[in-house]
Length: 100
Image (cartoon, rainbow, N blue to C red; front, side, top):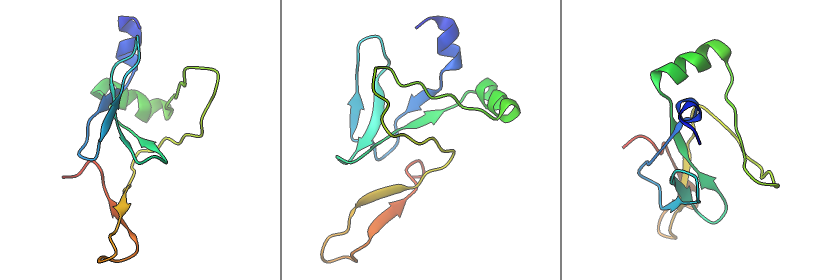
């Protein structure tokens, strides 16, 4: 990936619930949360990228390969934490992954 493309790409960031890092040749490391059902990543925008998104109101997603998995892109997400133990309530804990 050239410098021009690097300036256009968002930066993946590590957050407190990340439990693994995906690596591939020619790609930057990608910190993720994985529970066996989903991968959750968090991305940071530079000020220039943020201004571009505000004015263009668009975000592009590129999946490399011949298969396009189901994905979603959002501006805010709540992390659904591990299922509560039998001593706790039966519902899952819902937390914001970026907040401490």
